[in-house]
Length: 310
Image (cartoon, rainbow, N blue to C red; front, top):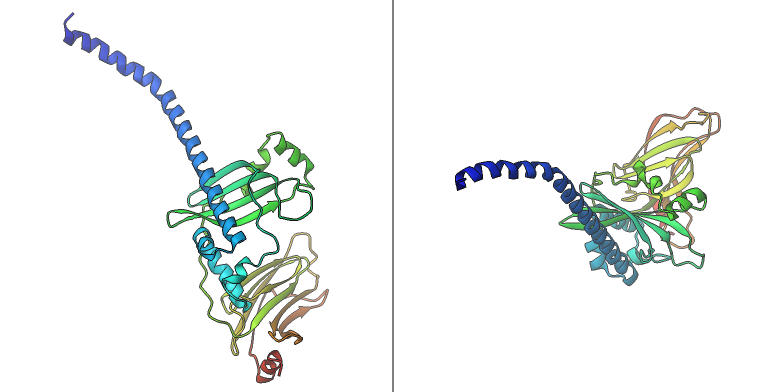
């Protein structure tokens, strides 16, 4: 048999063998690449968090800025300035250090576009004397400027879920296959930076059975659900033309007759001077609550004098 005839017979055989073996080889290769990607993702996320945590513990603003997501940096700065507190020093005024992930087991590292989530399980220690138990720590990240940046942390205490804790201890991860344990794939919008404020303001809402969406001066947006809470108004209040908009909605299981209170207080920087209730929308139990409402207020010279302690 000449060489040409031999090649004509052997080449189709090689092609057939390649066709039969390539799907399995391709699947194996894809699996190896996926595992390598997840391993690198977990390493990158844990490294980012550890650097962010070190910055918080050491009070290193440059490192904190380099490891924190942009929208989070601006939101934190806006809040600090809206309380007229020193920036950046106030960033590091925290009662306890962020929990370390050393010794925790990473159950999953998940990526969705430019968002990622790392899920840890173990004795999450917040630096208190209370004995640590196995719980969940969820760390969220955003990919910006070529690297991962830390965004938020969520802690899930499993004391009320002993069966879930037991499942996770035994390696059953079905609990973390719910939607809430996956990154959204969408980066939050970056807020505008606030200018130096005139008056420190807070919104107080008492909303049993209702959701309340509150907005002041088109800059400070708040959401309250079935609770009693107060939040700092980003950008504070100005002397004239403060604009308020709110929206209310009854929650499932409510009667629609619950009371409601929405108040704005101006806070004095002078010790001993009481807050000034500058705006209020109040409905007693059984009254009719507006689905949409709005209002405006100015700060009079007399009210300004009160806040300045004069």
